[in-house]
Amino acid sequence: MIEKLKTTEYFVEATSTERQLLWEQWNWKIYWKSEDQGYFETIGYLCKRPVSLLLAFATINDHKVCFYESPGLLVDWVMIEKWMRDHGMSDHNHCDAGNFHLCVQFCADMKKEE
Image (cartoon, rainbow, N blue to C red; front, side):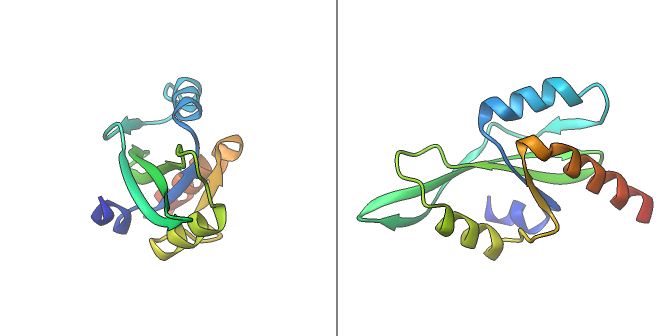
C-alpha cells in the first residue's frame, strides 16, 4: 500500500460516504476508476491507542488520487498531516471533499502539460 502512495499525484480528505457522493456527482463528467475499497494503516499511537487511516485509491482522468480518512475512535490530525506529508502530500496537491473541484482541476492541468 505504501508503494501506491509513491505514485499518487493528489490527496483528498474524504470519508467513505463523501467519496461515494463525489463519485455520484462527478463520474459522468470525468473518468473515475476506483481501484479498491481501501487499506487501513496504523500511523502511530497516542496514549497507547492506535491512530489509523483508511486510504482508498482511484484513477481520475489518468491520474492517481488517494482518498484518506481517519475512521478510528482516536484522531490526531497533527500526526495524520505529518504522516501524509511524509508520504507525498504537499500544500499543492491536496484538498477536502468540499473542494474536490481543485483535484479535478489539478488533473486537467496535469493532462495539459503532458
